[in-house]
Amino acid sequence: MSARIVRFGPGALARLPEVLAEVGVERPLLVTTLRGARSAGALARAGLFDGVRPHVPLETVHAAAAAARRARADGIVALGGGSAIDTAKAAAVELLDEVEPRIVVVPTTYAGAEWTPYFGMLLEPGRKGGGADARVRPVAAVYDPLLTLELPPGDTVGTAMNALAHCAEAYYHPRSGPEAAGRADAGAAAIARALPAVVEEPRSLAERTRLLEGAMHAAIALDESGLCLGHAMAQALGGRYGLAQGTANALCLPAALRFNAEAVPAAVARFGRALAADDAAAGVEQLARLGGFGRLRDQGVPAGDLPAVAEEIAARPGARANPKPASAAQIAELLRAVW
Image 1 (cartoon, rainbow, N blue to C red):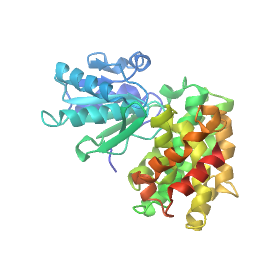
Image 2: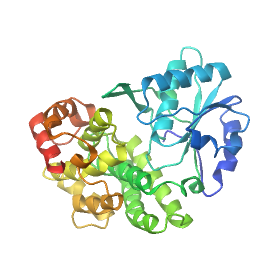
Image 3: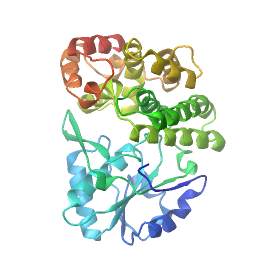
């Protein structure tokens, strides 16, 4: 497990100061959005960078690192979703020659970036890349379901779909083992049960808590495995067209599951059982409909771009780690199926 210390439950944010003391952080920098900064009463004396932006543009990473230097920060608290957490990790990498800032994460979505040393960022318009360094793996995570009660429906469903994609790929990634699959079972089952209830009653603390717990299991499953074709498709689409990762995963995961079912039928079937669905891909589609994401064409992806997007996807590590090799031509067909 990457996060050595975990606090989970309603009101857990109030325990953040004790967590910071436990990991030896005296001068934290809070990395978040403007909205997140208003939620951070437990960090009143921290330095602040509230310029987090979707997809983590490189200039935002540089700005966060500069803020850490000005604050003489010895740690970073990332409060928010995947973009806040990835901004913190990428900024910490910039600082490694000067200091190794310990990262504490406070997830406010279900995206699942909090357990790994990996991060994605927008290197230039239309081109998303990333990196990894074990030294920026978060040392602690604070999960407070109260912070998710105001999460809008689209973000709720989208980031939950991202978590489901982590579960699905944890069954068949080459690095996967019993721990990853067990966490995927727990995560997928909790998400499939809680997500419809949360959409129906967004301020249900019990169901928000269940959904956040499912996302935590999904994040651990990701750390114990890795990304495959579905995520590679989502990353390429997100970088080129600005699609949120949850939206892209909601659209791409069913196609990837159907593609992989022939190669790893037992793994895909196990995922379906965790969802309480006879067909895993159909089960994902049913949950995705809660977000109203439509199809790729509805997200502004031109049909004529699909061959070039497929070439980019085929070169991504996630596609190369897929249990069934996928050519650019095959990936283009998968994209057309969801266009």
